[in-house]
Length: 58
Image (cartoon, rainbow, N blue to C red; front, side):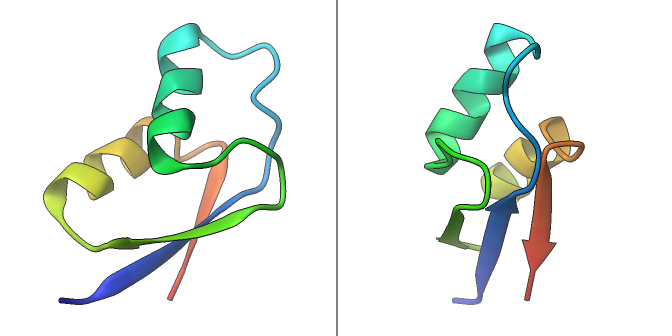
């Protein structure tokens, strides 16, 4: 299965709690961190919710 790398590029401070929980679910806790996940619709939906805070790298 294809994988996708996600990098947190903006701080979570000041954003709603549900978006902070989404970052936690993705494994992103600090700005600048990169995580790798399988590319599936659930992960894509999480990325869409916090797209203003993350960057997708291939």
